[in-house]
Amino acid sequence: MARLTAPELLKMKAAGEKIAMVTAYDFSMARLMDRGGADMVLVGDSLGMVFQGESDTLRVTLEEMAYHGRCVARALERAHLTIDMPFMSYQLSPTQALQNAGRLVQEGRAQAVKLEGGVRTAPAIRACVEAGIPVVGHVGLTPQSVHAFGGFKIQGRDDDAARRIRDDALAVQDAGAFCIVLEMIPAALAAELTSLLTIPTIGIGAGSGCDGQVLVCNDLLGMDERFKPRFVKRFAELAQTVAAAGSAYVAEVKAGTFPAAEHGFDNSGRVYGGGK
Ligand code: KIV
Image 1 (cartoon, rainbow, N blue to C red):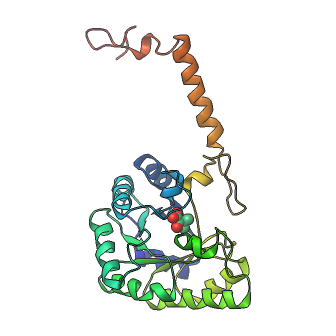
Image 2 (image 1 turned 60 degrees about the horizontal axis):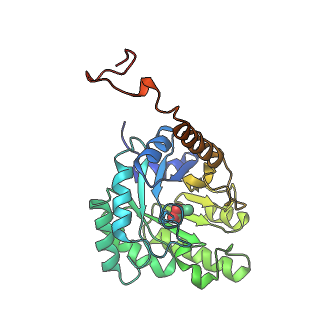
Image 3 (image 1 turned 60 degrees about the vertical axis):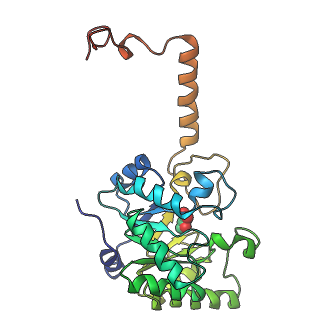
């Protein structure tokens, strides 16, 4: 089965077909999300928080993004692969952005890269697009600017802030991005941007009026029982399931009931008890 491409994803907006994007950082998760029918898999720099246990995304490196990209790329059959450009890998100049986007394509096997920011990031987006690298934009709450925002807070609530986000989204589209993430903005503003733009909008904490949605895989699976922001819906409660499986394993090891005969081998290589 062939992977979805940027032009095919762009056409989904015109066809009124919703786009389901999800993050993944490793082979096993990417394989399951691909099997579940995700249209786009994002190796997000959220890996700094959910995979590495940091309190923000700011210390993630380009090498780490490329490494996780390769792991995920091996698993995907149908889903399109986008990789985030980490903090300070594109802010210095369009040349720096293009060089590092190229590395994520070559070393991380990205089909597209995602850059945060609007008007100020447009020259970097344009440089990548002109070199043939598809770009996903990201406006609203851009986590790499967490210190400037004073925390992970909803953006675009007053008229001025909403106007800036509108200008940012238009700049991203004009620079040639084929798709844009709208994070943590009021639902009405996200719906307005979705009508205004010709490229698909992918929302997270931006209401149902977007062309698609994205969630962090660990959040939708309920992998951290302590983390339940308003915009997350848990489609499973894996924290309990995984912890229960872990303690069942520990209990059996301690009791000596695991491994049983059928989990071992005799000298011939056959399993004790006659199996293979
Ligand atoms: O890093 C990330 O996972 C993201 C998504 C939440 C959009 O940017």
